[in-house]
Image (cartoon, rainbow, N blue to C red; front, side, top):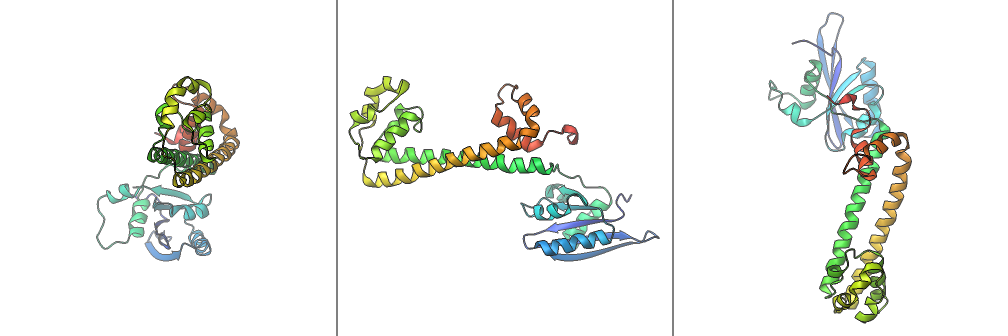
Length: 281
């Protein structure tokens, strides 16, 4: 079988250690391989990098195992060609012997050019991706807390969500704060409504007649505080994303013109696939 990379390495990544199979050839073309184990602590990974460089290894491959591949990639990026390979792809390549180590099998496949690396975006895109994914999680957490708030209101016989489209809108927040302040008169609470919700004051008054106990007030106080914290975190995250998106403003603006794509979706798209389409077939 044709040799594509005469000198290369296969890395089997685990949480606490990595096993590295280094393949080299001498002047006569005789193949040798060496397997070493390193801790995933930075000092040990730097030793691994130096060891590979001392043997003139410039291309390595490893499986995309959870997040454990990232510390290794952080230290190899720029000095090596790193192929991050889908474990399923490696598993389905025929010809593997049962007694061969994972790192040896990865090295063999890399040696003969049988591995295809996954797309790893540049650092700026990766950092943006971390923030947009974090923002998405914060938004999901806020949604979960709002749902939890609605359940507490339901257990207190308060049907605010049946009348108000957004429980956390201006009217909803004002009514909830009044409830926590001790106001329990449905008519007085309904008078706090604003905008179009005032057209439903009679219905709202019926919805606000409940059995709101101190226990519900305790839960509601905690939930509202958490929601406000999440909203503040989302706002701060949005500001950071805006700054990081400045180099990609043109691409985001263009994506924003597509039907069904808003600015946030455009930012997410850039964070996931980058702006250079040449790496996609």
